[in-house]
Image (cartoon, one colour):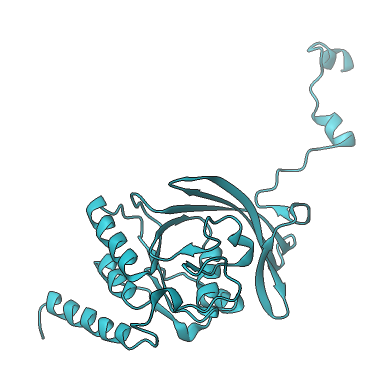
Amino acid sequence: MGSAGQVRGQQLEQLRRRMAAIPARGADPAGRVPVSGAPRREALPVPPALAGLLPEGGLAKGSVVAYTGASSLLSGLLAAVTGAGGHAAAVGLPRLGLLAAAEMGAQLGRLAVVADPGPDRLEVASVLLDGLDLVVLGLDGASVPPSRARVLSARARSRSSTLVVTGGSWSGPSLRIDTKVTGYDGLGRGCGRLRTVRLDVAVRGRSLPPRHGSLATFPRNGRVEWEHAPVETLRPAHPEPARPTGTAAESLRAPADPTARHAAS
């Protein structure tokens, strides 16, 4: 048995060989994902409801995107790319919902999952960028040094691959996407099945004015689709407690005159 470093090197070499064997490797990077009706060839597809918030109508190839918030939209990004014929990977995201991604249209045969990338997840992501269209990298709370961020950004750019980083700090991304769960539907008081989730989405770029929108998942024909959210149909994620009304409210109201309670007794 070799040292841990030697074993790690062998694993990375095996990963590189597998990347080289992916179909369309070596072809024109801009044509690896056949996107019907895409606004620009240099952008990877995204759920249509999200496209209007992004400057390229999708995730620009060769860019790094910093993402925060709900993992459901990450599943949607992976589904959009693999469903359109591209190849993607999820690294360091052990709780990623593959069933949810499949329900959104992901082709799991085109999705590599590295739940435990080991001590150097950046190196694993670097290898995957050689042969895949999209790599989603979970940073596990780490703050990536600017020097390594620049190296990985340059690699993504040279390979025309897109890197999405989440769960940590990354300096100088091309785009930031922040999401927040603001509503849901389908759950009753302690029972029911979650059917719809609404997200508020904020997009910021280096030379892009901030853009905001509201998206929601909707089940349709055995699949889950992203659409623009009709706000009035969804419950707030953290509903305010009901205010007492009628006699209950009267019983809680303090007398205006402190002496009134003595007069009443």
